[in-house]
Length: 188
Image 1 (spheres, rainbow, N blue to C red):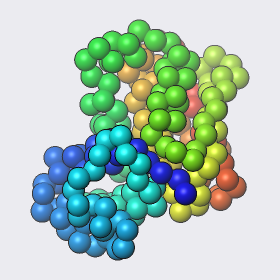
Image 2: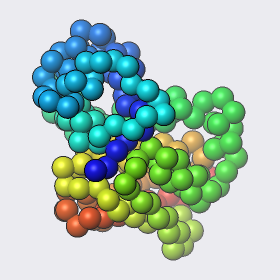
Image 3: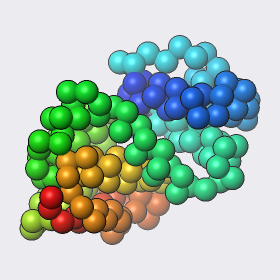
């Protein structure tokens, strides 16, 4: 079973409440089923604990249905806002001073601390291009792909990369046991 770190779950809960309010959050939770409902009803997500990715994806799906009319692309913008917030203060300076290649390697290392049961490899075949391969996600985790796009896109922009493009050459929903994200950009 693939799991996600509690800090990521907590960030998502705080983002929903900040964006839409407590009532919208309660509406989302009321529509969840089984394990997902009990997890989000508790409200005591521990940042260092691990939680089922399936429950988190159900939360994302329901959040999108309730707050974004089902628009899955909204997850890209939302994940960009989360990384913008996470990369504040000294971390922002650290990212700004790093090259895009350095930032990609750093963000992929951080992603590995957010997912258990998922591996990530980064390839930089030429300047201004990267291929990231995630293994372990299953078809039903497809929404995570939107989050991944937003995280890398925003991290590259913060590092000074221009004309950032992010597209899956092999998306999670293909169900191949891996997905590949192709990133391209021009330097500062």
